[in-house]
Image (tube, rainbow over all chains, first blue to last red; front, side, top):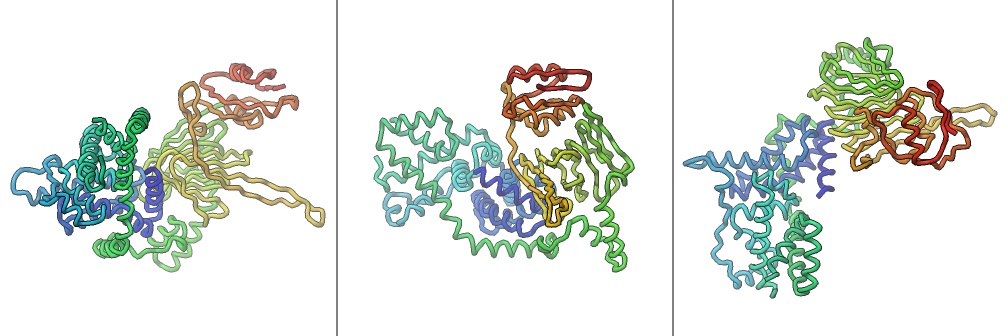
Length: 188
Length: 357
């Protein structure tokens, strides 16, 4: 994980000092997928998530001179993505303001029974289905840690929860996933 | 059953957030329940899965980036390839004055700026031997000047496009961040361009080594007679330029001087003394002199400057003697006495002269 951040820092130095578009392209390719996935969890719309991720990146570009002073750019980017996503939700919401606590990221999958898992085949698909069956925050935490390699501290900063809560969500996620998958994998 | 606890600990281990004690507990539990290896294998499989997703994105992400650039085309001027780009301050002048004849004049002016030495500045701050000074420049930049150093700058520094200062000796800079107005430190051998950072420059006249240490932010460094080569420093990196002057005799038995330049970049590591961490390269600004595993030869110039004394080391003193330590408020006598506790030697102190034997 620390290798990631030192690569990121040298990209950012390049962008700040030279207005380097090629470094920005690398930054884009590194961050966009994660930001898109994160935003998608909240918005559940491909179009809107692409827009949010794109807006985050251009914000980083516009503020490139100040970027070297930011301590953790990945967290910074995710936080912008979070705020933009919440704005989108608030615009579409008919009632009160939505906060990140209210978000239900649950995808309803009726058939998460063993037969379904068997029919679908590879572990990857099963894992994705299993992951999507996790409750809201739990799924977000699991994805940020596993897919984006973020630390407890970073995840806590992005989701505005305590490190202890992050830990609890992660453990819950792992327990649920192993429970779902154990049948498939003949675990005790 | 304990499988719950095992899964809990495994989850933390996969997230790289398990404490040492938890890892030990996990090892113990897994020894008691060898079947639990299954769980570890499953989780490893789940975790490694994320890397498999990346390749799929490649084609898709390229298209997304192109769309992104189109959408925000006004933010991206036509790209200039970095390899061919001249120093950016130069480019700024060209952009502002587009008229052909002015271009020539600007070229001259730029060259003049390049060769600006200490004499061309109207303000000069000098710190004598044994003295350290802290000053604030007109733009808000803080500078700590170490002993035996001179900092030159123009009093209208804050009004210029480029903030240029000239340093002989050693100084620590905490540069006030100003957008589009780079701060440049020039010494005899190297130039450093910054965008609001904290860093140390060591370039004493008589030393063969010029050093720059970066604590925060980012800086771009270039060697003065090779200004095309630019070096980017990251925080906690240190750059050292060693000039090895070689004097050789050529065929006609005449002396020839050649310059051998060695450039080195390394990571700085704090020195731990008595439970506290010190950064050797920059602690002087807090009135602390730090040295790590240095011989008398290496310490001599440091001590001479710090205490404003002249040191002579007799041949009888073993070259293998090395010292690590910090000095905060000691005077030269106390310092040498403290060093005697580490390695045996004698010293004679007469006014400002020290003899070590």
